[in-house]
Amino acid sequence: MRDYNETISLLPLFAGIEPAELDGMLTCLNSCVRQYKKDQYILLNDEPVVNIGIVVRGSVETIREDLWGTRTPVAELRSGEIFGERYEVTRTPSSNIYFRAMTDSVILLMPFERAVHLCSMACVAHYKLVENLTSMISEKNRRLQEKIEVVSQKTLRGKILTYLSLTAQKKGSSEIEIPMNRTELAEYLCADRSALTRELSHMRRDKLLEYDKNTFILLDGQTFESQGRAAV
Image (cartoon, one colour):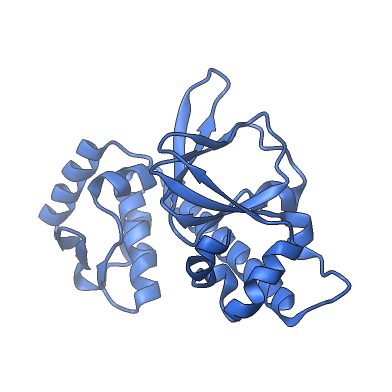
């Protein structure tokens, strides 16, 4: 694990923790680093969740399986992001969720119970870890609620306007650059890529927005409140 300590120390979960303290804390928590090949499953749905995973390198895909065995990508996790924490927080099994390495990946596995409960030494670094972990879980929940608001819109236009409006509100500007290409945006909106491309063209025609690659401009102060609700 020490081979990756420098990289691990730069991850958001360990912000504010001195590298000199990190190795001892991870050892105390019984953490370990595992390497996974592309397409290798990190956690299968019949395995108990006792660790949270932290993506050190590579990317991980969260996959949901329905009753008929159809698997649907839910989210893509990149370096620094965590996964598996929801099942430990809620005390629920992994159920129909899988985690798969999208690329050759390095994952830090940390026992959740040991991470969130301070040991007798109660070191400052562990306090900071708990603080960072709580903040990251809260942020993931916020993003989840935001996605629910987006995908619950009845039409694709409503979904697009809701997502762009929420992003514009956070940026404080009607001109925004989103971190997703068309394929990724379509997956986020639970839509077909061709349908997304077609609807964006129609929205440009209707003078709701302008766009160039990943840059979008909401026209005439269009917001979800003023236009999005009318589109759903």
